[in-house]
Image (cartoon, rainbow, N blue to C red):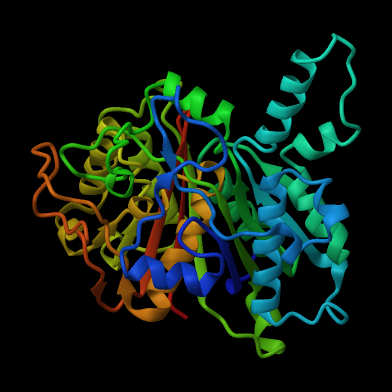
Length: 415
């Protein structure tokens, strides 16, 4: 069976550094940090008092007030990013065959704020279980793609992938395969997360996963830096329209890039810690290259998972050196989490968008906040430190990993 080619025809982003795809890209190439003191709740008793929140977002600018109250914030973010991507794609929704349009979305946690609020309301009451009738529909992780399909009438495959921080990269790979195998013509894919909550911050603090650089939030996310002390929690959404190549060409669509392939693997090592030698990461990148029919030397740019954790950054770079050998020093490696923070289940989507825009614009966004050399990191690797670098990018790889040892990798190429 001959696999169909898959291309990207629309992008949408709602992030801590920009509320549209264009704002997001402009902030990326200018090295803007989205980290700031938390505004959503009182952080006096929290170890970490900052995060990368979405800013200047008013949901009723996009969604009817009554409808928005039926959605957790993570689903609101999904709707806004998906609508931008659909509009950006130029799809004529009156003409497209909606039976062959799917929505495959990623969320690592889902409606955490809704769950938190309902439980707190119950705990503070008289013991009577008076829960909001929208509690369950707002909370469940699969409601984001459901809402997108209901709004637009898309009747193809509709579900959520949940693999912690790899969730939206998993969704991208599933969307790619759905079109490749001929099940769909178009898939709205991506991911969203809204975990900057009391429960989210408290839980990640309890794991010692978050940076506690409270005196300087904007410099706290510092992947590859020798003084990094954990990730910075972020929120938002990224959406991509994947489309069968001939379908896109027939309607004269703008094509950003081709989705060349993807890969999945497991560390099979630990609940939260990465394999110290990056064993699963080696396999996922090898799988991705093989799936795409590309060689290591074809890759120009890697957007790493790069969360700014002491163990994870080193393990990933070790894996890159193993897979790419001498060519590794020719690759522009970066971590855009240095600016956006870690969007958990939405990370793969917004980082895929950054990779695609690097191909389109011939610019690799920087890894900001680097000041101290880590002796455990190969000094010959080009980590695109502190300033964007212009270069031709024909092939870009995006790595995304999740607690539980879930690894996902997606490759994009210029068309």
